[in-house]
Length: 172
Image 1 (spheres, rainbow, N blue to C red):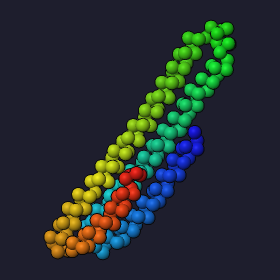
Image 2: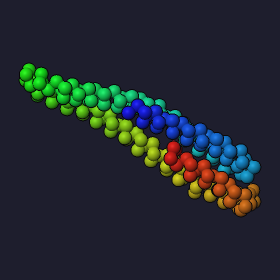
Image 3: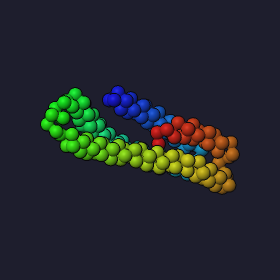
Image 4: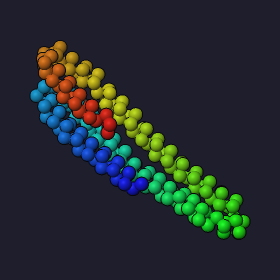
């Protein structure tokens, strides 16, 4: 169980490092193409990084609670299974059932909080990611109309941004 969580954090950390390096590459290349798009990209990347940091901070807290409550529930289950004769002898079935229901309810509530956090993060981050294309096209179109950028430069910028966006959908 701990291996799954460690692997989750390892994968997420690798994705964050990939995104940071790609973002640096995109920003450095977009400076020469369009300053307005570069400013938008910097603001978007900073917002997404702050949102990701908030997410991981909350994720760690909730994940620790989920693990603790699951351990308690599994410990009670193992204890009841291994000592079922004592539970019967001392006529503690009702108490053990109530104890297990309480532990199960606590674990379920924490697991639901965990799932809600993941869903909230994924929904918001995907919307930010998908919203970037129309905004970049709008800013690029304005730059082309004003004569600050050529269509060829705009196509290059879109291609570079798509490389980052396609990689970042899974993390942001």
